[in-house]
Image 1 (cartoon, rainbow, N blue to C red):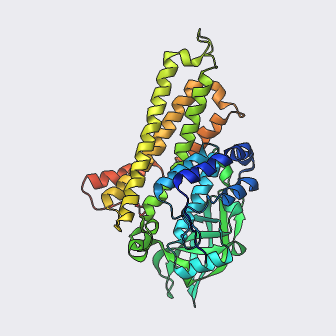
Image 2 (image 1 turned 90 degrees about the horizontal axis):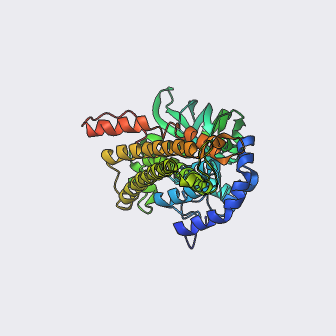
Image 3 (image 1 turned 135 degrees about the vertical axis):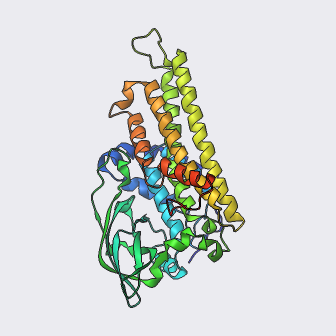
Length: 396
């Protein structure tokens, strides 16, 4: 076990991202083609400590607040959305590992001081109770970062000796006990390597199974008095961290379209520069305001979670539902802004060699992730506003 003497600030971490931006950008097109991140990028991110946002401080991690997660992952996304998404997932799984029994944490970090954990919450597995743990067989789609993962945290139905499901859990499995099936063929977020994890009759000891139900119910508030991060609401953490990528993609697109507008003409008009056109100016303004709106909602959600965690409070249902709606609204505003920016820039946006089309594909693909899609969050928030008790998703 080790501890970090100095935990870097958000500004320091973003500065590290800036130093890596040329490298990440260099390999972004390759990742899109090969459907996974380049080894060079993963190694550089790891060496810069950018996979430690969710790692417990006692193991050398940063236990960073949600605002820092947004700052770091959005900065990476300005260079490559896939690299940002994988960074988000690995950090999120580091956070989830912090909710496992301490014996599991000690085991993982003693064997692998800087683990790269991929994971899928859906309990798409068969789980049989045996002495000391469970035998697990399953297939889990879609595990971002799986080509480089050293561990997987996967959803399982927790069963008793009679075979009855008594809880929903997450099981930690080392790389030696699972395989990765190459299934990730998509329009966007191609570089995330979000393949299928396969485990066949793997024994998982009891200490490597955590209760997802307990985590969603806020039991971590009681169990982690020493750390604000691990008192954060699990469902809200997963929602907020998922949209950092969108913020960075939006900023990158706005910057590029503004820059090119100074020299790019508007075909079939008398405008030698797009920047001279009132129509172009209006489109820029609309897109910029939507991007600002996305940032405001993302940071409000992050502040809600950080504040409650600092005060050792389980986030209220009202705020949990609003966070979920906020994050969906972030993704929708970013996608709308990108639609406007691509129209402003013109048909060249869709050339295969143009970075704008990759940004557009990545943002629109990730916005349809089950934990991000806006309609679910709006309905959940609307139910609370309407005074109803039921919820439509456990991830609140």
